Length: 386
Image (tube, rainbow, N blue to C red; front, side):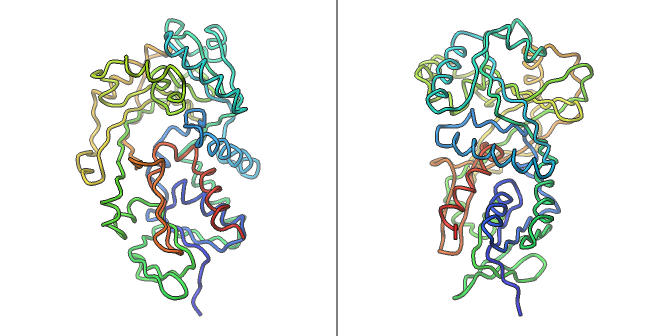
């Protein structure tokens, strides 16, 4: 007698894993298939900053819901969640105005934030260069995680906690056939997995299983470059620090009254603009600093334009700007890496319910670590709550 699951999910990154988590909470029997022996793409190649504050209004709500899940699961097992908050730092009048305007929006939405003067910013984060800081906006509820640890710890916790959960690593779904009673999935191991509902959360399988849809999806690939230093002695940096160019880039600030005028007046041919650079900083558990990042884009039809090489001009620029913003000892690099994620050009996320039983979710973009837990909760509650 063949084993049939209620749900099969392809893609063991943060979105697929949280889909599985919420469906298990609803009482379903779930198998999660990940093509690699462990997740190694966008979910593990980012800062690990869980910052709803940077998202647009509707996604801020989902990001705040995500915070609840990260914190509650952390009470059950160590996901590496650290609740030290996020600090946005303004360096000039325009950036300070945006912080003040977003603070008023936060008051209206009931999202806790605190406006800080220069002295309070320097007290909270002594690593900041006094010559850079004008003011700050602090979000005490926000958290960080260690990307290389979080997703694997969550999956192990799910295996331990739910007898109805199966984790299949090194399994690629290569063919999908919908029958009269269920969906049959053929894998790279020449086996069949049967399920009532199939959820596809992996860009690689999307490209393989539904190439025409993938090519016509208007998805955009984003390549980022990031840097990790050697552990820094005598410097303790708690939480996330987000700086002036971030304030002028993140979606939340685009809802501020003065944003359009400030954006219009900004230089259009700068190195910052060309490579989508903004400076973020987070200290990992081992004392190293995570710096970045940059953004280069190409449609999925032109994805080969974004190669795997590191543009060292970008890395040198990020390091130089970091040293202007922060009072750091000599920066000794431990790692450079490139990451990529897919975002949707015409919507906040790509959703395609191909049939009543086959569902594609993709293109959540840079919101994935922050918003996936809340987004997948919303979707499972709306579509599959029993």
